[in-house]
Image 1 (cartoon, rainbow, N blue to C red):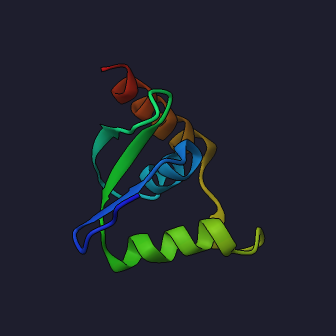
Image 2: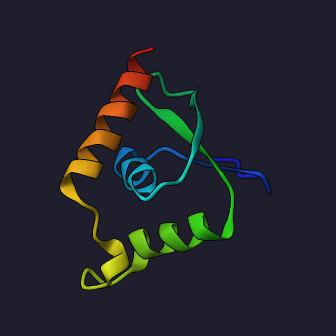
Length: 85
């Protein structure tokens, strides 16, 4: 994954859902060399970096780790719809 100062790329669907549910704007979805994988592109900012660290390394008791189930499901559906396009 190639990240720039302005764009954060990652291929985890669950992390992408978490970030979208937390209000991070997704700027696109790119194909990868593996036809079964996609990369999700986000605006790279300090809040995004904090959320990624919380998701990857945070304590499950951290309140910032919590996401309303309805908001998460809406983010998941949005990403699935975008993957079908």
